[in-house]
Length: 344
Image (cartoon, rainbow, N blue to C red; front, top):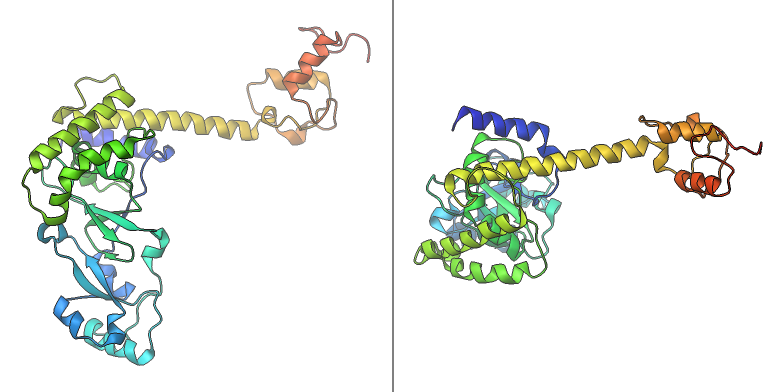
């Protein structure tokens, strides 16, 4: 990857990305080093079938990095978050964990994102020639292992965007740098009512590939989906950059420009909110000491702390701008003057 592109990605990530929350909630699976800590042990289908009923209740379906090559899920004993008798824990510990106590964490990471129905999973690395991202839908409660990303309760819209070449290019380029939350920060196009129903038509031809790994008709299905996703970005996220977002060499530059634009806008909005939270003009009920003080507040470019204003002059229920208009209307104050002209 070019040095200038790496520098731009890392700079944007540190300066702007943290301001924008317009992205999907994505999390990674358990790392291999965490398996024993979580109270998990991978085993074969045969071994799971031979176990006693007390052990079988702890067996869950397990998805690991090689799932998208084999399309075969595994089984595992997963004790985290499940009460287990001491003698059974010792037996499982000796057999699967090489630990007489069989100690496992009581913390169940899946309960942090308690999915109502299912999870969407996809690999954390892609081949260079990938024109899309392989996906799989797994049932709630499955253990998702190392090398996979997961999304709780995905919609058809989520599936369509994440399966596209636009997201594939983001993963291959930005994801390869190992930046924190790089996948989570992918800029989705704005979603509108009815988009899920439209997206379903583009996803149906891809279902066979996702379920079985058979690539018959895959190229045509991906080309159709990618054309639709590209059109969504062109229509809903127009950005003045060189090249078309549908061209492979321009995709990542387009996405970076879109991400920077959103991050910059979100930063300005957040800074404005922070200013108003400190500015008395955002709190019309704050008491004021005198009309000259009010004019000073209105003309000030810096936030004025409420505690410095003292006693009431204007009604607490009135907005400062509205109060000023009332005084002018009643001819109690002339614009450009320093106070009421009737001595009152």
